[in-house]
Image 1 (tube, protein in one colour):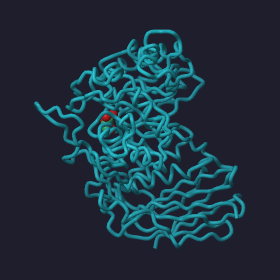
Image 2: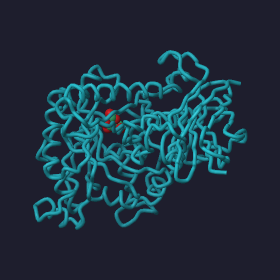
Image 3: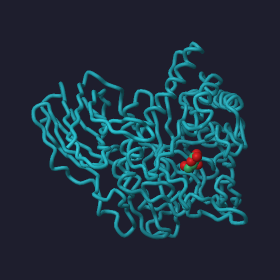
Image 4: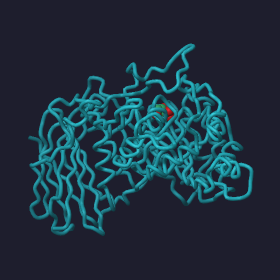
Length: 503
Ligand code: AHR
């Protein structure tokens, strides 16, 4: 049995729990939109063709914002193709995913879906094949209130009220050579700055995200952020971060430590943004929008895009089946995002449905929760108030990828109004139970409300449409509170949530 300790005190706060940390992403990719959120023939479909079962699952997941329409897709997208009468919309080649885009869903439908799902839309503009004018046109179409062409077009298309979209991504992964319209940091930084400046002339209150690196493994990582922010600092609020290179490739010990890498990634972007702030003598600080993150098995057959003359509509693409270890890592990546809540102000689990997603569907049929659904849903539901700083002491183990890392990772939230305290913790050990002792200083008399752990003797278990419930977060009977100390035994390869309330 390993032992580890965590100490918290409500006087020491990282920052508020931000609802936008629990965002997700819907891209026109594979079956995310078509047969994912939209499936007119489905028994639960509404008048817009949206699946009611998926909307319910998105609500249960606790998703707060949803980024749209890409991703790589947006860099070749003409948003006008997706508005107006559906039968008149053109079919287009989607070069990003070698597919055919039928444009049955566009911006108006997406915003309607967001309203039904109770989420905030977050829009990306095409800065791959397009530029400033197109971004302005889309902004006017979505948010325009005056008697002008694109605002009137939206009204004519059935949306009298403006969509009121606050958060806008200035392109997607423009550092990536795979991106349509890929740019150098200088080229993109100028374009992002001019697009942002013009969009702010329309509405100074918009929240704008400049593209950071598509991964911290990119050869341009660091320098990209420096150059892009040097050009655009005054005009944007966020720089994005994306990460997917977490996968279990035969080295479980390293995989379970993926959040160590995410911590490093976030801290490197913060350092770079703050260096630009110092050099430019700026007052404000740039926040991070971690608007694509997940485990993704990129080398598996399901991630292979169609080729040649095959341009299918909504092909099966990136449909990873997640196991228990994947869910533990996803839970741990959320711990990392919360730990950095002072600088990570938004994040999007990529993606929402079918495509590297917590929710899966059969076309016209069943839907189910993947293992990764559970730590996300429980964290989104119960992390409230403020994230507390914590002192953590844990045994370490060796990893091939990240050196020596702690066997425990944890984050603690405290809602001063209700008195609720929640500990989210991961035991990264592949073979040992870990006794976690949490010293809850100055938080008053607390009682245990709920203790659950997600683990399984076989960490490779995955949910299917036939069996999505054999392995779920289960009550952890070892959890006890005595005075200011909470103690619980966390099984190997596990994610846990321990909830306390005023006694
Ligand atoms: O989420 C899948 C893809 O990953 C997105 O389209 C792109 O932005 C990233 O490379």
